[in-house]
Length: 117
Image 1 (cartoon, rainbow, N blue to C red):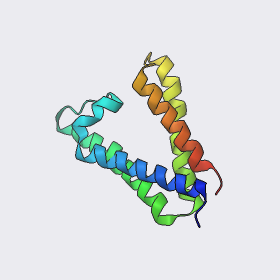
Image 2: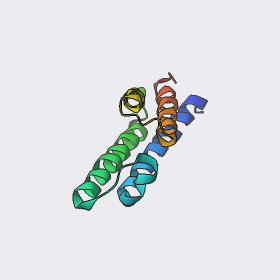
Image 3: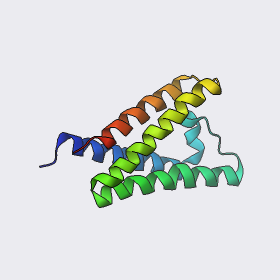
Image 4: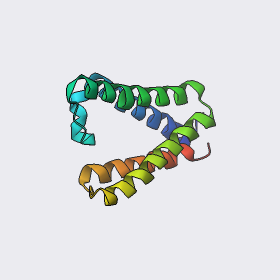
């Protein structure tokens, strides 16, 4: 039987994949939670590839291998994104609700993913 932490890690990986799928399929709609505008073909391609494919790939690999290393890698990635976001929020004067929510999610996801099973 899977432990509670293992189940949380699977949920986070699925959430990562879902975020990637949303970005891949509806790149124009990510503005609401990222502040990024998909202007022109180049911008749309960037959102589909980075926010889409990268997130899908990271989440799928964590689920596919079902070992601690991919989950830890994904967790460290979320934590690093959170650290950079926190610093950037003050440097770039972007302490806004969507950034705060993203920061909280990144920290929670990162901690869950680096916890030992």
